[in-house]
Image 1 (cartoon, rainbow, N blue to C red):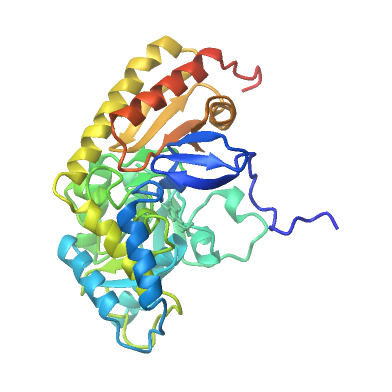
Image 2 (image 1 turned 60 degrees about the horizontal axis):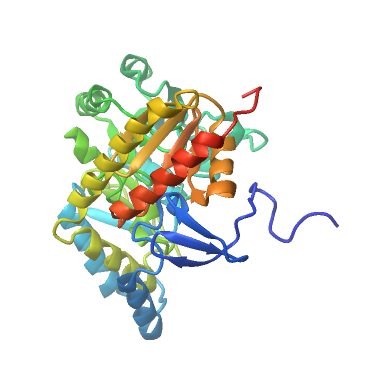
Length: 396
Ligand SMILES: *Cc1c(COP(=O)(O)O)cnc(C)c1O
């Protein structure tokens, strides 16, 4: 037998973390890494944050899980806080980002069904989108590498070019339910929607009775310096998928919606065994407590600006390699002039710096939201040292 006990779907690297300390990870062999990947924008509070650790430990000892057949004081409380701090009137809790997007897709379809328009079932999605790995969410992207071999996929998606408003509007017909879009594409290469694009989609939704569904699984939850990225654009969605940072490392996601958009989601239409259990709610509450502390999000913005300007200053010293910086807050991308995956490996293996590659040869820089200036300095030191000695492959 040659297959590994862990199904071999990931290209796992040699770093084998066994412990986390704040913004650092310690590997099985004792090596120490600066973690500017954060489990891909998940560990918003870094590793071992005392408030999160205590909340989970206390709740685990009190009540870990009960069925959604019973009343949920923990879920009601956390949902109320999300409602109080966002556009939404109601929340469905999930265990992952893909499930949050699935719930968003179902909510959008049911809205039109409840309105007597069941034929309005198509969501218009965008090139280079990433919405998760379920059959539904791979059907929502046109990226071949995620879809190949899994056909037949779920019908009901049309694909437009990201940032091409005219192209997206041209796809609207009698079957359109709405748009599903990441305000800032993560996997796609930290591609931020221009304001006119998102605002144009919002306007089209208002004019045609469509739903704007945002996937803020990566961009949301304080990552950009706002609680949610759409706040940077002065628009609100009708439905929004959230996950990654929301549990700070505990598996948790959420689908948020306005009362109007959620009108079809009545008793019996959706469910999840684990979704919103007391343990997950305790983790979510602890993360939100920290994010809503006075000055926390402002500090994300400030650290983001500092990191960004330091990266920009570094570019001329390494202009054979670095092209430009993009993104918002602590969701930053460094565009390379050669293969970003290879450089991420080099910085990791030779300089103890953890980053994530993305589309368009972008290196994603996604530190914990709790970084201070010392972590920025450490990142820049490691990054500039890596850039100084790195030799791009001749075929990159
Ligand atoms: C990570 C991600 C998802 C999928 O989340 P999972 O928890 O892996 O299912 C969906 N959308 C976006 C934008 C993401 O970044």
